[in-house]
Length: 77
Image (cartoon, rainbow, N blue to C red; front, side, top):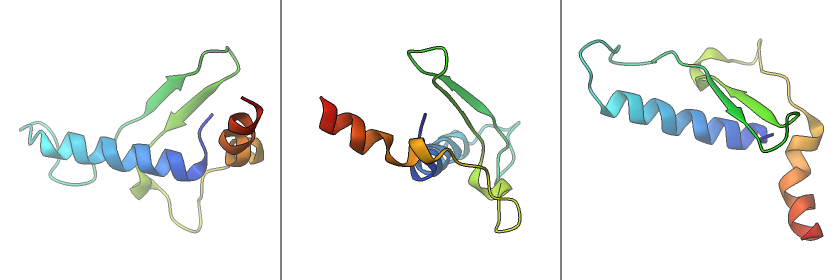
């Protein structure tokens, strides 16, 4: 549903939010989380995990459609 760049932006925001809470049960860095976002259609969804889980050797797979969908969909509207 989201492009790779959008997923990275969402993951950064979630990590900042969690760390800013300064909760005593949370780690001081690199919080682990998994967010599942359901789109308006059954086939539309995204799983988002922390960016720190990935490096060049294990990049998450991307859907080529998601990388261009926002641009194409906004032109159709």
